[in-house]
Image 1 (cartoon, helix red, strand yellow):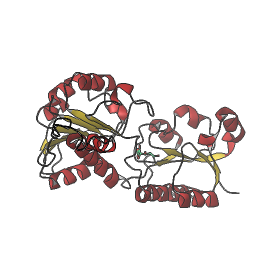
Image 2 (cartoon, rainbow, N blue to C red):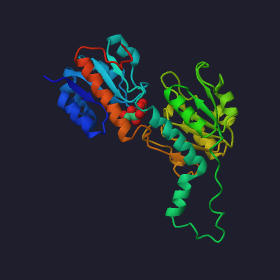
Image 3 (cartoon, rainbow, N blue to C red):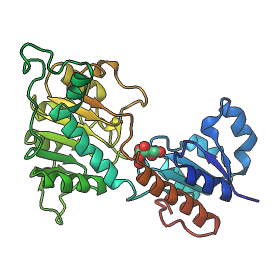
Image 4 (cartoon, rainbow, N blue to C red):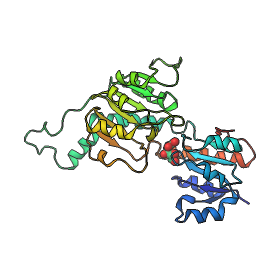
Length: 318
Ligand code: 8YV
């Protein structure tokens, strides 16, 4: 009998879904209208879970799955998984470590360039038929801000943070960072506090894990970033105090923001929708065919390893 897997969030690569269905009995919980009834019917036989980084799995849900052996997160963040409880029960929790680093770093740089160069604004200007229509052509579109050479501050110098740094360095940016401690294998300047980092950079890029902290980008940090500074977040929405961010943008205390993640996805504060100096994405940093394929392969292999009786190579809990 094939192992039964409860799927809490979708996998968007058809070949991966085909493989999953070939190897396992997939129970697509995320598609059910009556989730409770579905769980009552299948919970006892579920041996594995597939979830997304943002969705994770709660302790309450794991407690309802007595036969659970493995949670394969189709993402790198495990902040939405109760890791302590998983460890307690000896449940393997795997993540797609390394698979999405490049894409997330690419989008961070993309968002920063989009916001400081006003790419979306220019796009709308052309689509709205405004180009060449104004009597004073330069007035409607203000000049943008240069990205090359910016002072870039990275919050969290893990895999993604380092990949952002490499990319920004190629644009002659001056890189500095903050993390739990200074790292001696990088040439970038270290600041032990977020405000000190924010004070001396033009753009702050949030690339930190959200397991232990939230709301760290607050009014103090945004004020330190200042009216010419940009905030980019490709990590987790909850790392930013969203109310403080909205206030800072509304009051012009920072120059702009590029956001892929939000506190309560898919809800994005409506006031941001009309801001020209804000570029919004629907949590899509890892959403390329190449990366989602690699991520899906890790999910498949992690489940396979578990059901062969092996410790999954990507396990973070066992
Ligand atoms: C994905 C993520 O959007 O890796 C993560 O932690 O949040 C994202 O890459 C998500 O996991 C897709 O399921």
